[in-house]
Image 1 (cartoon, rainbow, N blue to C red):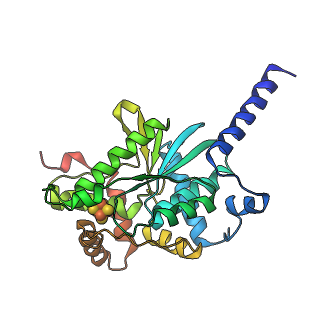
Image 2 (tube, protein in one colour):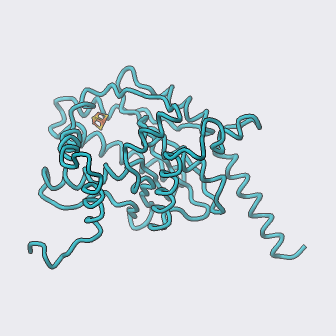
Image 3 (spheres, rainbow, N blue to C red):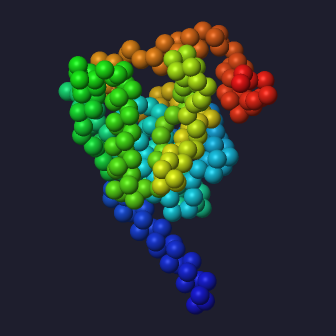
Length: 282
Ligand code: SF4
């Protein structure tokens, strides 16, 4: 056996061990489902479009490298479930190997859905790490003078970084999509007087982690259709601020701006990478 062969065999064994270490045990019967077989119509327009856009984003921003340990932020929404599902399904098809570590930071409201979400993750092949907090509840007390969502999401984000560090993850994947990125641009313009948005790949803390957003090129509507097609469970966020965010106002405004013309949305999205600095104010 040559040195090269020995190295290749060792690498294959390491890959297999890594995969099994982070997944719950699965039977051969379930294997097809977890490889994207069960319930998935590979000719479905939604699957193909999302898969294509995810592949483009991963490639364009060099989001995932061999042996990455990726914490996947799972919120119970369709976007993060689609993200975990797509990254898992992709793992079986591509030569780049990585491990996925789904985490849910529970904001602490009664009637939460952590158990049901963990069960869905289990069906997808993963143990969900549920981090119990009271961040959402605290953000709605008199002790908080900021916008509840602002404080709650900042605290949850910080806790996610701590978990990533504790679990040795070098990437944090979040389920933000194209609509989120456009909405954030408008929220910042309208409410902060700045122009900026979420980056598809964003190094943090001098490169300790990189936040990646593999759904950055995917339309929200496409994800919603895919989630319905795949019969992802729907969870209702019991938080009192759930229906009352600035994001919802901006979303409504943008929907009327698009007026059903997808070109407008695509042009706004494209404009964020074609900024003519010479024609901006100084
Ligand atoms: S909607 Fe509620 S749980 Fe979500 S970020 Fe805002 S305060 Fe937190």
